[in-house]
Image (cartoon, rainbow, N blue to C red; front, side, top):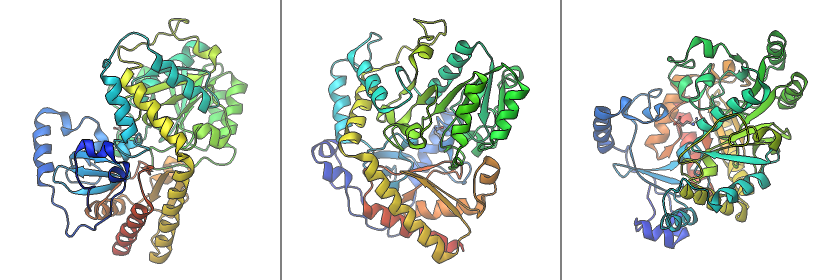
Length: 458
Ligand code: HOZ
């Protein structure tokens, strides 16, 4: 698989076509990853597990992770110069593709005026205004540095606002590595078999009630068993950290109703879905208005940003107007604001969500045909540009269903794809992401690689 020619940073900034569209040449042989291996050995000497986030370690699929040399458009190139069509997209943020020229330019130009101020600046309100314009449930926004910070702040705010301590969450949902929320968690915690992390005091974990996703009766029972004690229900409206769990018709509406009835806040964790599924995220797609929303990933254009937003009468409980303390030296960082604004501007101008839907539909049609022709016992889920293939025929509505997936088959599928130039997350319990830099040809090549993998496996 070829990377765009003339691989200098400048050439990507000059020519969008060069940067984002390149012909696909099949790999002539199985790629070798000697340099990645060397870099991993080196990293292991200094970094626990050799990685700065566990999901990167390839533990679930065996073997060493590849190391990135660079990532441009829909491609990532590894340290050995193997090139992959990338469906991880930095775990979601790169919705325009990697290093989009406008985003890079915005960062470069802003950097010339300073890297960090610790003083308010205009870019903060500009991005906050954009979030408020796009997302139905948001009147005020506080910028933070990651999705984890956003959800941590959201539950503190919910507790401070309601003066209650307990939180209801869903099994397999992942809300970052927040102490209170690393209970029956998804993503890397699930992948590594540590959904309840060590190091979290039992007294704190006991304030978190985990129930199965799509089970309204369980939520109702939890409210009844803890009268006037539940501060919030936090949910990924489209859980994408245990694969993808589609919400049943009426489930999110039911949560809204139960929260209102019981005086608890409804928090939508839109770190994955915000600015990806639709302009207004999952809350727009499913027509349910939460009290608080958390964001990350796409909102930062590839730089570390998170945000929490909601109705003003709740948000004003945050310091300095209210008693719930929250802070951050780097929050509202000028480069991050500039990158986020540039990314959202391009998404809007290019009618991004409609294009992503078209690419997603193409992938879905191809995968379904491959499943039909190979008879592979799988279920495929897709919402817009997010997708997941499970190696089970059981409909997947909950973590329990997701766990019926044949993980050995997933591993075979993963390595077949990687060795044929397609990179999906190295875990069954993650989602795939399409970007605007993916082309119809990329999707075609991906479907062909997936079909070949399934043919070999079944
Ligand atoms: N936040 C991502 C959700 N699946 C995983 C990225 C990470 O933990 O590094």
